[in-house]
Length: 382
Image (cartoon, rainbow, N blue to C red; front, side, top):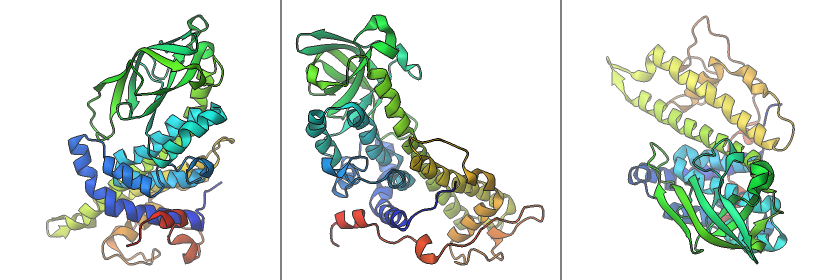
């Protein structure tokens, strides 16, 4: 089944793209160069109600549906990958609370997280337990009305700047990670909690990836999520519900790269011609665009079906040079707006290329973005 955007989704995409182009994209290079977390952009997203996209309205969130969340992430990532991780990680870290938290736990933490007042991180990975989550070694020993946590976590996104972390530790080491792991809400101001080291990364450098150490960190019993032994199940359900947003981030990063490549190719001149007019360059750009046009709808459709039966996406069968050339034609500076014209150099097909399958065009009002209701209401008056 092919995903078709609704009018509301198109409106949301248009407003988030405008915000990203005007306020986020100009900061992207500086953020990556300085490797500093963009606190100003975190505040910007909070004011625009884009930090709490994965939270219900009763907890102070925007209550966006699954597809709308993916659209927000995709458009933010198109401008800056670091900034796109802010709503992603906020939802990732809060999902254990959303899935297994008591009403008291939700009332205590979710409003602060949805508003962006507090940041949260997801503390699962360890040096010896990456994909093999069941090999976690952190211990949680019950002493009176507290658990005492000891151990370390590795590669924790936002671990050094978070106010609270959902931590997974073994309460029953003999039972192993699958049956003996439990989940806890740990406030980072608790004595014994530290983030002694940050990873040096090749990209997304403004988002800190930290090593965490917990040395006799005392966590109240009421901060345990679910029952003892539920940790592995909570972790797996969290990952199942959060991975599609990472795919949306990847689509956004790819789209940003394609946009930059097309713009450069249209401006760069060699041998008296624009680089984009060389057929070999057109092939590469068309291939990039085709893959992007197939990936985007597939990700949104998977997000729409989150929790349901996964199946092969229909758009996979349509990937080819046709859609990519149409996309390229529409984005070339000075190109005609009529996507059916074949006279632009970037749109000319080799005789061996199959004709593009454009399908029936949708009404302009449903295809062209407008103004998103939620985001528009949150934006300050000019």
